[in-house]
Length: 116
Length: 109
Image (cartoon, rainbow over all chains, first blue to last red; front, side, top):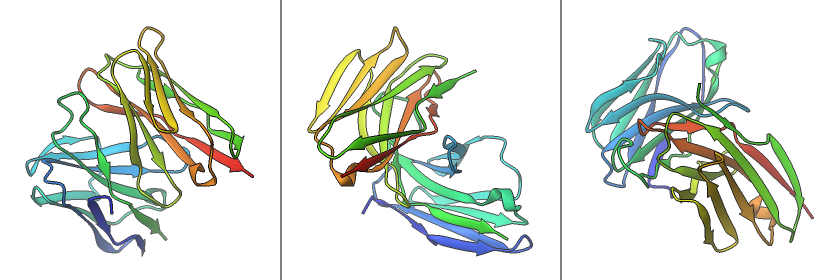
């Protein structure tokens, strides 16, 4: 139990499908993140939300659309993805978005996405 | 540009000691993190260093030299369950985390 839960754990979708990844944090944190993890590459920060407000969007294609309805929930809406988008998508949370030393980020177990 | 370097893969023997190095070049420095990630699982926090020196936590220790842009994670009395990827990340002057690609550690009996 990491305090950050993600569903689904595995998702296979066609390039024309629309699907969503869900994340929930039970840690009382104020910041939530979406990361992309591809094999043998560094974690790529996609989006950062602080108190439900998006504070960062790292040049992510518009086929990825985040939504943060409250400070405990985060979604990543997916549509018309490409095969190269296949990766592990990690949700994470922290007390504040950066902004201080020792601000540990806690990760969910990730959603394995395969685009066919 | 900002860069984190760590070896792609290392192999060690059960019961032995292994040192995983991380070198970094970032815009400013606000701390260095080590995370452990078992295959198919979430990265989990191991250690945080912001001052030079060694931080010990059970079988795991982490060292930092800010002047050299260098850190290492030392794992003692290796166990099979230590087989995992170890991620190094540096928080830059904008409090953004810059991640290394991770070191896959393979433990052999």
